Length: 204
Image (cartoon, rainbow, N blue to C red; front, side):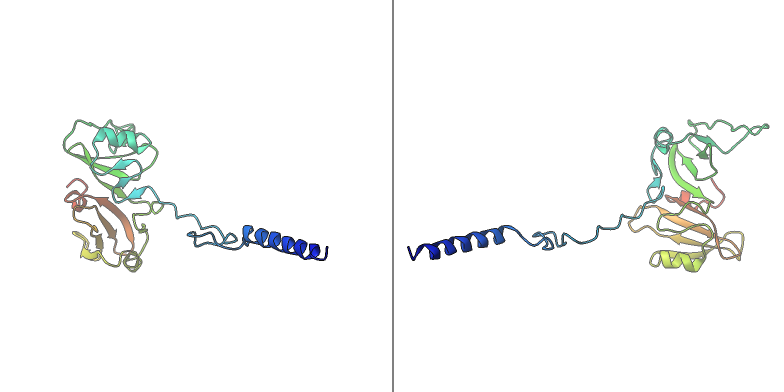
């Protein structure tokens, strides 16, 4: 009878040990996660704009005109208008060079050549270029955003104006060209394939 209390104490001690092993601390990180249960959630990734190196919105550089129209998301029209200001229909069978733009906006202007999208132009400060450049920025601000592949060159007509031409990271990729006016600020930029991205006078 004297041994019964000792056996009971041993049984209680073993039960307590098993319960402690089965209940991990709430702040202990799970194996392989590297994050404690009480850590703050990660911040959401920055939202990407419609302008990309490979196209704009649902229109991809190199895509045919039918795919560009269906993928862009809103109706596209030509730049020409009749005497009353009504847009003239664009000839999608034209193998030459011409521009399209959204019906409800001036930008972007999509350059079509050989029935394919080869470049797009932007003059609005509301749309950011791939990498963050915008209309209104200075050359110094652009060089911070594009520190490695930006080449500064002269304008064809204005000796006080300049261009920052951002070379592609890979051979055959798209080029970004920022046009800076005599005031030293970006007044337009374009993204496109060569040689079309280097056309100075629109389609020429």
